[in-house]
Length: 482
Ligand SMILES: [Zn+2]
Image (cartoon, rainbow, N blue to C red; front, side, top):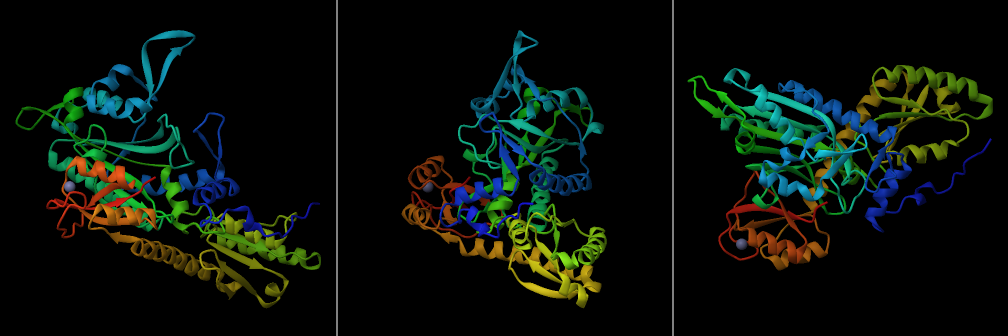
């Protein structure tokens, strides 16, 4: 039997302050979330990483259905002619599209795009399905994968193939489509803040940063612990652009032929990247209880003499906890308790329950929180209740910590030079005025590396554009982004 040494386990993870990117990759590979695939830029989701995605899917899917949406599935392949129909859309996506040119050993008459997003194929189908105001609204969602041929990739954040969901809706009026686009952004905000404990800024993208083919794009922007921002979800009001191109028409109640108004919205496995980078620390991953694939790990301490008695009680406790929480009993004998403690901490499990011979004798257990390292001794009788309280407190604690981090790392810049200084230092979100002109946005990006993350819904008074000094049309947040 091989005894794994109780060596300084955390040495295997590069500290955040030394190299944040390496820390990120260390966490993913050492905690078995994902692995690199044979094709460059692709990723294999291992069970623990896929478990996170399943939690995200379950939480969002319930919310989509609660707001009246149904799931459907559309094909992976899109004829080139479909993609070509909407000019802005094809220009936005064509550099990243993977093409299928051969099938069954023969050259295809028309190239097929491996979907980079599904607006075109879905719109073509909607044109066949929608005829009357009675067919509206049409509220569909698809869980699937898309492919975007990226030059630089990073696990979860930017991969050639990724998992996501895309909602696609059609409405009779512009107001309904706008309300839908805003409603779904709010659904995302609710999930990301309340389940994942990640604070987000909700707002509108600048015209330069909006989705190719959309009238307006709304986004949620989160701040990572290295001071860079990450777009955590988007919702687009597509207006009638696609409806006109694909001929999605309906007869209204007056018998007039009208184009529909549309939206699309999506989140992806990027959310897992955000989860890692918002909550993780130098000991590894830290998962908020509501999203954690394993919420509680029970580690029995098993000296040979008491082994049987402790293990029996541990199995009983596991049984009662399992009914309420996602619980794992780690009774492996080839590892020492100390090694297991480190291992589960690295994997981000929110709460550890330790049971040794002395605890057994006293009818107690020790609870250890992943977020603060705090230990508490509780009686076995009220274990289930104590675990519930601790998980609630951890969820709230992680939220408060992430919120405080964002507050501390949100600055203000009156000029581009001030923004540049912040971007060379601790970065973060930077509030500023913007005149609304593309050239100012472009110049700021060129000189500072920061982009406009969004125009927050909660606008504040601002005087001048940070770049040109003209009167500011908008209050915006700048950041360097993933
Ligand atoms: Zn300006």
